[in-house]
Image 1: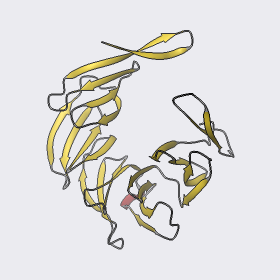
Image 2: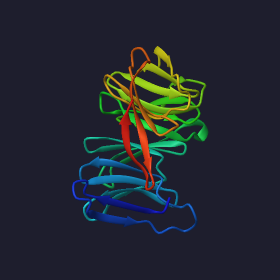
Image 3: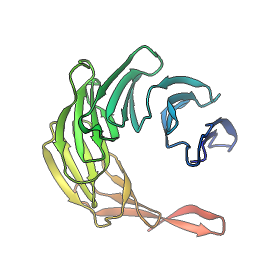
Length: 238
């Protein structure tokens, strides 16, 4: 929220670059940052267009029209969500940009490329998932499913979607929206899940990292924060 992005070398702690966002009002700072590769990142802020930045120099490489709420990168292609719409573009070619709108002006919370590299899947805050064929941009996004619960997180892994809905439920869907399985989490206050092939990583409300078996829903392990006078500094196994 302070409007500054700092990149540093994790090996020696030296600052590599600093990007400062000129704020026009309180709270008008950086909303999210996402790495594209080892030397470039995307970021979004309320008062500026979404930008692609060189991490070593803090130079802006490209700007994309609109306030981005989420993004996904596949090769040199970028998919992004906005309030009420989607974009698919070349990362660096400013003339190669496609746009479309979603019904109801919904806020897009997550986007992902399908296995074909052309279909963009988008999840909205109001629990709907759409798919858009960017090779035929004149065709509007199609509704895949409406989960009818507040959607917290969405990821696409191979040929299936994994969605976290409130309160504390993980749903697996195929690419056509058919439900494959549903898992209830013991901790209803977990958030920011990370889906891997053999484990789900969740952040707990007490600064824990929980490792969940995706088949059974049982916890496989936990890292717990350790506090000293300087703040939260380490994680211990339990």
